Image (cartoon, rainbow, N blue to C red; front, top):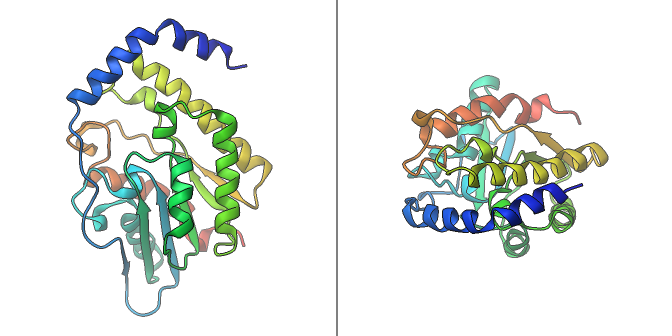
Length: 241
């Protein structure tokens, strides 16, 4: 089924290798966000708690502080739309793959949460993580978190890398092809195990005004844009159970 992808990748390998090395060399490497990795909007005990885990978007790459990042902006949107006090926490590592994230989470001190959102896939795409392994790791992640978080994990779709205009062609299209393969695993798992996973479409961020200085990651406006698009589906008040 995936033979055309691997044949194409093999034929283009010298070009892809050159473009990949050049892109790494010329693209600014932005730091993870600073500041507190948790907070809340509203007073008193929170009515809902949002936890975001994953790679660079969870780590706040593209903004200066975590309160400008995805978890905080999601909580802010939910608070503004429901009027309820909403807490947030983010746990992310820039450049991490899912297997390594699992190891990190085994010893991480995570707070209570009503919603857990996973933002992963880019590094497993560029690192060509085998599909079967990616699927196994997703199931392992669910088992790891199941004792603390009973609600399905929200799988934020793998970003559409074929739309990353900062990547040269054909690298952009090959990475986009691979990203869609991993994203299809998200969709399959959400269909097969709805009690464990829920799939969320990633809002396309291509407007340069929404991107950070590296042309890849969302900037402050980009994270707000994503949060605005996702808030209604992430909000515990709008989810079954």
